[in-house]
Image 1: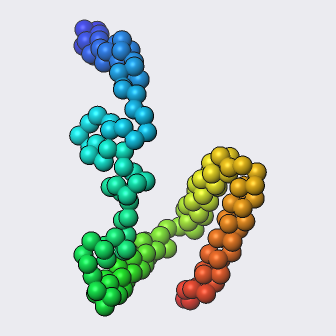
Image 2 (image 1 turned 90 degrees about the vertical axis):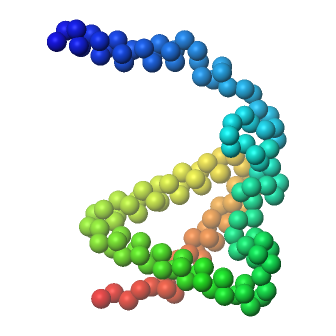
Image 3 (image 1 turned 120 degrees about the horizontal axis):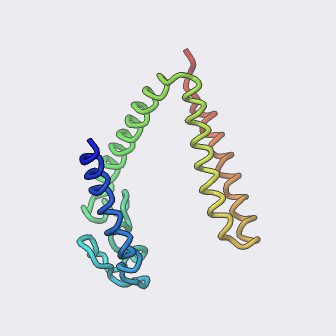
Length: 156
């Protein structure tokens, strides 16, 4: 028993020594913005934000890439919106089955995550930008509340 416990402790300690002997940060190359990072998924060559991969995803890009006519674009957009609404309804159906306390906890978690995001944004802004951002967030919340009131599902 003592031998197997000692062997297990030794086996678990070996990876710790390997990581401790060479700090990971020291092994990573310093990459300046716009330079190509090493690795298998680095084809973008720092093009994010410049129209590279990850840019233009969405309906306008699909319309452009597929060279859709206006009639085709309308059908594709309506089909996409229908799928999005169906997805929302499916998720909502299962969320409605949660107990009330779980629903309340989930709502609090969402609100906390939203507030954390807003706080992160606000702390990087100048005082003038903060005032504009807070006005934007207030307008966004009012628009959402109006939308919810207009689209309230009937109880029952």
